[in-house]
Length: 251
Image (cartoon, rainbow, N blue to C red; front, side):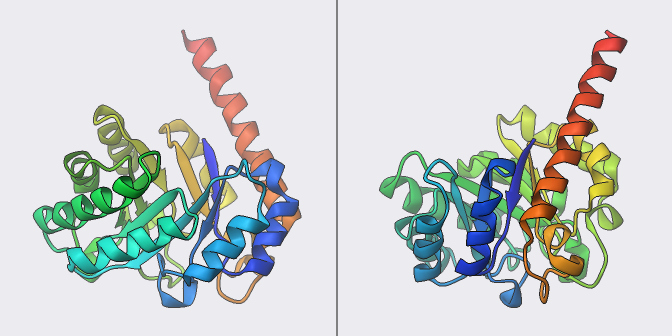
């Protein structure tokens, strides 16, 4: 399971760099513009320069409307700015067809510029609250659009979490559908250390966190702390070892 950490500034990215050995992907977002809020191109560039060259940089394009051309341009801007993982929050798409339309434009725009870029179609565990596409439709949307991964996050940051909206068994179904489609499955949404056992059990490929590694557990007012990143990774590794041992014992 890969650990994706989301700084919202160059200063926080430098804190991530101090904990680089404990994380896999540095994700650039702007939390005050939404759960997948897009940051400025120059911030992406500066964060790309601030973190070790062997750590991929991801960038969110935003909680986007159903405007395929607009979103494709934004996604290309993130790639040009140095991101190799491009995440699109399908906030304004109410049907799978709309979501596929948006993601096909993103895939073409990004991969025409950089074929090795990694495109992530992101939906929302609390989709019913905002009227967007069903979470379990995301793997098929990602597959049909040519994306590389399907992701779930939470749209409304009000203290509710991923498993409050999509229970672990439903998340396991999401992961299974993604894997059947040849995609990676990413899960986020106020994920805490206590969720790592379930996330490991269901085969999550990428776990995205912010609040869990910020001082006070606050994604908006807290700052990422390198020691909290290290502690979170240690728990990830412990669960991975325990799960592997359990699987071996059962076989």
